[in-house]
Length: 415
Image (cartoon, rainbow, N blue to C red):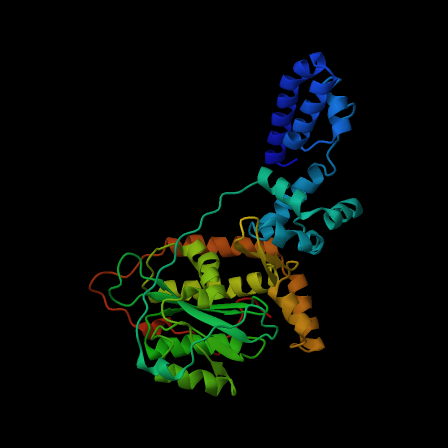
């Protein structure tokens, strides 16, 4: 029972106890007046009040306590599955419990039985949330920051934002995350990240500096790794995207590409990628400075692993409805409803963008990968990266040493 309702129930019973002695000694007329008043105060019916005031108001214990519907086996399974999903919310976790349990069992990470799979298939989101609270792991989120610069090349690009309910894959929001630490001096690493609005598909690549050479190299790597075409690119107003070189690169790479941009100082126009900047970049690297070619290469090796983990194993929720209503105080409110959580790859398959052969190939490869081991690899690479030394003062860094070899596979795993 919700806490506020329990408190109201206790307060009501206490009020009735205080009135009970007076009621039992009162005459018929007085009792009638008291019942009328108590109806308004407590919300109970007249006959219900007569029964309560004439009887025992002390609560009676249950004859039989209700037991737990799900035992320790479900708790243990959720602990393993939750870790494999990197501790996502119950709403995102619950729809994929059975599939992930079977996947982890295939790789020896979990022992499943028909009963366990049946329980995982019918357990509610609320129950999962309560269980996760018991096995809660520490989580942290760090703020993101980055400069914005004016640029004349952007003036020809219209200001708008991609609709939140865009059904077609290929409409990407783009942004740049700075890894300069407490200083913006010299060349340091940046993460280019693009997010598909329709499916939640994400792409990341690390570049050293912001010159045309490194930015083009990063964009080329992203374009060759994507398994579906880009139809629209929507960055903010940073000059690293809006310069004449980049405006020429993307339309040439994807003919018919639409370009749009955010309004100045309106971060909500790039809301999807801004959210992922926090959860998929800042959450792992914080505000640490990275400024060497070796660190850049290590980050790209890590991003190759994250590419598969987050696009094929991490379910995301998508807003499906906005309802505007007026509350009791005559104020306009909005209620948002989300669909069932699915991975970006699953959402992509539903759209029909991939052929049946491509879907079968990627599904077979996904099922062959141990997601829990993949997550361990990602965190081991993060720990290794955090211990790598930064650039030495007075020693020049050649950004060309950090360029990605575009001849290698676009996935850090052997596809």
